Image (spheres, one colour):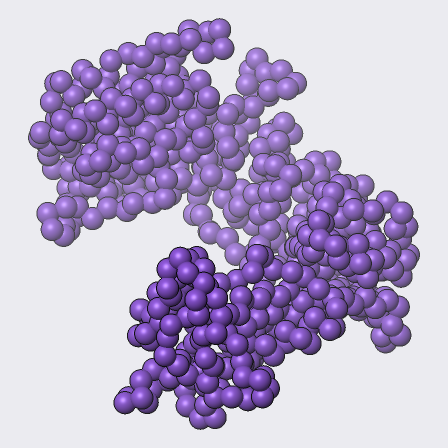
Length: 629
């Protein structure tokens, strides 16, 4: 049963200025056209000159006169019945000797702009006219109730024929949103036809696709398809009424449509999505907490896990990640902003006994698992959620991770800032454990011994330095010209927002400096220690307690990257210092003083075991060059 049908058909037409006079015996019936018997102005001469160059036809315009065009006959013929160029309507006879035909060019320009029309008389007049280009657009939008399903569909068909072309090119795009009125399932479909090749896609119960069509201009909101200044705009919005379309859908879903008036408003778009989620949850009889919209929108676990967990939403989501437990179920209910994906990765450090260790976590630490911002999405496909990296840690190391995590609570903490500045627990420990695993190749007895954050930080510095050394197989120091060092490392002082700041730029020269910088800043600048084409400068403030690490190209002096803690964007008060250092390096580049003048190298041994030097290509060491520090 069709509940609503909206349709609008219009055409966009461009017309060429036609200086050619066709024979009196009928349109297109004569095999040639006389390009004469008309008056031309100086403005036309350039156009005919270009035609003369392209087609080698002797066309001449008598300047500053209004006498008839002095030219020989230019033969314009209908498209051939056979041949490669049969798609065009007219050709000019190129040469009687060669007998070849070439496409006619719309050499005489266009009238000002396009015009939009819904008049069938206009459309029919220009539909097959070679001296016009025409785009015919048909918009169809329907709401139907079929076999217990509410089918909402929006389709846009575009047919285009260019100047002097015989055939139309067709494009078709449609999107559909189908609700099962019994089960609550929904399906988002998309069909495209381009150059006669159709492609279709249908996805079930994927809210990301519903969000996409809500914000698009091809389903709920067609208002911007026609320019508001066009005379046909009001006719268009009367036929393609977005409000009626949304109202019809919501009434069938049992929702009040009065709060949805303009889907160009983000608040009303979110309200429409909330209606769909409520309908979905109600029909599926899912047991949800108070704040459940983001859990459904981003972490929906699927029917399989809902059945296993008595249709309890949070327990089903935890089960889909492989970390189902009463403890975590309680934690998530009490902390609805927790990022469950991050929680799963942190649990991977402890294996199957994660509950035993999670029970000892300080509740304030849970804030480190919260979503970064409102749009942050870390949920992957359901069939990939259980994939994790297995870490082989002993019981002491697992206990130490819990102790270090709890030590992130500052002793003098306040209610607003209880935690140290770390970006995430999983990332904090993952790099450390990966480095420790690498070191066990040289020292099997090595293990993580730190029991608080300060000890962990010191241990991380040591690990970073050693891993950097292992990767290279040797230790090195860059030697720069003394004038280069003095110029770049001169202190910088200026006032920002009423406060005086002093910055000390420091060129990283030794491996140990690279290792310390990376460990302090929580990024991998240590891996750049043997990247000979770059200069690394640490711009330090407050005795080195706050820094920005910068990479510059030695050849061009250009800034490659500037990174604050954990690869973040530098604070605003660093901006002037960054600009000054960049200018200093640019100036040195012109003097060719950025290159180091020497590199000192020594072989490295760890735990009495000599570290092999990596293989080289073209005299340069092969190193990993990750994105960012």
